[in-house]
Length: 477
Image 1: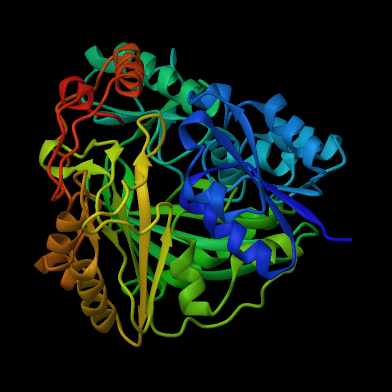
Image 2: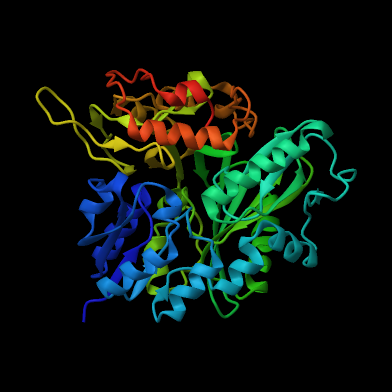
């Protein structure tokens, strides 16, 4: 009997999961909100089920709707992708209680490590250094300023606010809580010491659920804006002797909870100490660079519950995120209808896309980047024998990429790849400086999203910005 996989997500990750699942002979089911009715992930799967209106809470965060879709389609497995409910232990438990296989770690593992606060406690018990922190209402004397208010659940830069002095704490906590609740269904936040220009290193692990853990190299994810990554690399070329230390810390953390499936242990390196940051109990956005250097399919390993063998990375891989954002306006998200879309091709080039190629004279209108969700359009990944060869290949791939209709990160990515600090591997999380004009009242952001959904948006070719509420309201963090 053909087994059925329901993919509880959208965009490029849903497309990527569906492609591997179909290669393994699984029947694939997409879910979609009204904003995604004609999206690529819907067309890629064998069948699709509507789960609600555009609001994430009414669709991709709607547990009853997702479980009903799984029951209606006879799903044997549910893969959550990343974001949304991917690290929600209650959802994982509900899936397994319904007799459906959860493709990911157990609910117990997520409660222990998926919460940043829980993961810090486990790391501390294992002697792994963690940054000073405090909960709202506790003294921040040991944390110091600047500090970062962080959501305990979820990731992707959501639910984070920088605070430079005590006067800004209450407002930052309120804003972070509202954003975390909207994005992940959990408003738990805490404060952590902010390192201004560290290197962001993450170690890929995969557990068998019995205490066995494979450490699958590491990634350098230091090029970021708003605590969200734009460029990722594997392996992390500058580590030296630190590599073995971080690998063993990551192995110990995962083994301590008998971790199952793919996960990522993240560290911040300040030049003297590698501080434990968090563990993402899910597949990472940047997993393709690990796949490229190790010759793996991590999604296949997840679906088959197969522990990949450890091996040495071959060559170097770089991933760049093409996002519908306006770098000139502080990386303000720029949803809208796409015009011409052309992805690069050639040896050593992979594209994980969430929108179709389109455009040209007389062609029908392109896909839409909705205002309701993350604005990631695609990931371009390259692999080459050396880091410099990979950098040059990525430059060529980005120059071959065409996306019009909305502003994107493409030109900023090219500039960064050509930057002397990046070439010399002297870059950090501060290399790509944010030029974001302050935080926005979450209620105002939600109102802007509703207005953008209800109002026609000007069509603009050539990647120029279109007038709309996003330009008026400001940052979408």
